[in-house]
Image (cartoon, rainbow, N blue to C red; front, side):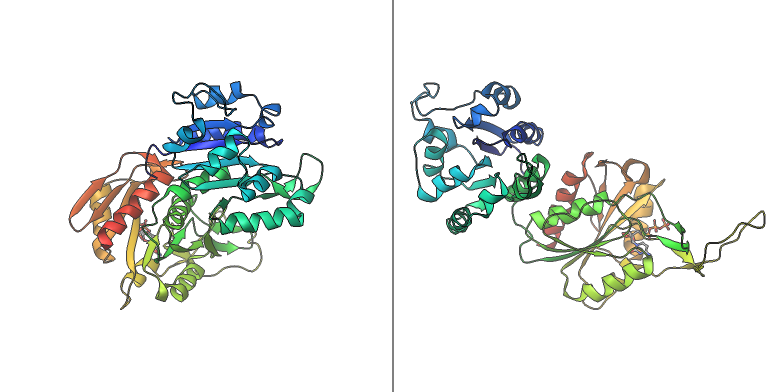
Length: 392
Ligand code: CTP
């Protein structure tokens, strides 16, 4: 995501206002500048002092606030904003937006805006299901307003159903997606991720330490950039990213089959999975009982998914990963050439596997390009931007 985006965070009256505090913290951490504006009702649930401390800026609550130099906060506050986000948005505030009402600072700001408006509803399930609210949601979408959520689950009133505001993490992910330039629009991207699991018997398997985080981050980034993403997941405990089609394939052989049956229509193939190079010749149907002092497992070599995809007649643009423990650049470049890849991402297993951050070097035929250590989400965007540059 580009740095230094700026948003106006509007908070309306609802118990979910407490989640806005965490949201501000996450937005600031993500380098997004936040200007908080609260309705009178919001101040009954959380204080402007809390929001000021977290955002590092004075919070505006009234139309007649003298803090803005020209006395026109309804125009001035959103002038430099890249978006206005209302979180939580009460049923009443959504109804106001539908009618273009402007009787307080936040609603006036929304009416006078020149930037996208994102709305995260938060209300009791009956209020959400009410025909009037549903009519309002349709109208807001028709007016080009983005509706984020709501979530379903236990509510403050004790009921269970749709209407909860999305959690702060989920809102941040949607805001990141909103701000990401759609440089992969119209492209289909196939990604493998995670470790494979080669079963020895019903309770034992050969696997590795890949967490799937890098592959999932690339899937999320590609979807944020507008691509149609198919993710082929090995063994991972991660949540499937937004707007991504996920197919589970835990063994190297099943991953091979899934990739081959989906690859024909793809523009880009990114092979992040740590695919087992070998699997047991026999998978025992019953648990192996211990007997002798040693046990010999006979292993057979698995097919190389990436190499086979790269050598297809109409191969998509192929990106490989090389996780090494030594001679990083040399081994990675050897793999790139052996598998006939336009691009390989080299990383040291000790710096990558299971971690939230990664340090990678991108290698193509013109040489190596080192990326500074960063979160896997940032690395994912950088890799994909590199792919976009190479494709153009
Ligand atoms: N790969 C694959 N199918 C396999 C093995 C690897 O698609 N059966 C892909 C990985 O997803 C990764 C790249 O190939 O993109 C890694 O190359 P490889 O040489 O297979 O790496 P290692 O398996 O780590 O090889 P080695 O053990 O020889 O270092």
